[in-house]
Amino acid sequence: MTHRKGFRFTGELVTNSIQHARVPTGREIGVRITHCGRRLRIEVADANTAQPAPCEARADDERGRGLALVIALSERWGCCQRAYGIGKAVWAELRLPPPQL
Image 1 (tube, rainbow, N blue to C red):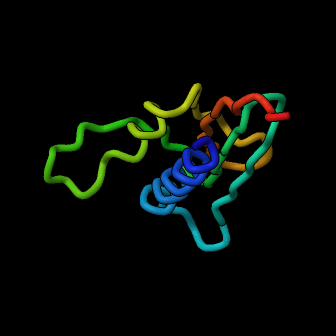
Image 2: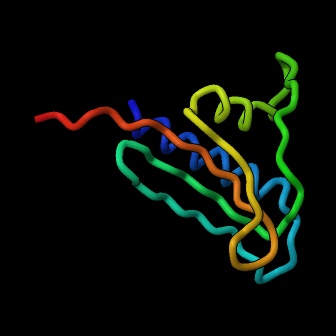
């Protein structure tokens, strides 16, 4: 189940970046996935400095649920300035199940 959430988070965060990060040519979107202890962190960076905010989607809306989904299913999520460069990184963390022996 965790790997499905990871795929979903990556897809939602990348889609949000593509839709909202109107950036100049050459400013690509970056994806980083890290594993630390029992956590999986998925981070998507772009050159836009605007902070993401969940919105209220109506039942018939085709968009507007991605970030709300990430917030609901993640253990933690956030947004921070990119360490090296312009823009921001939006991230979400999942707790991994204990290893099976």
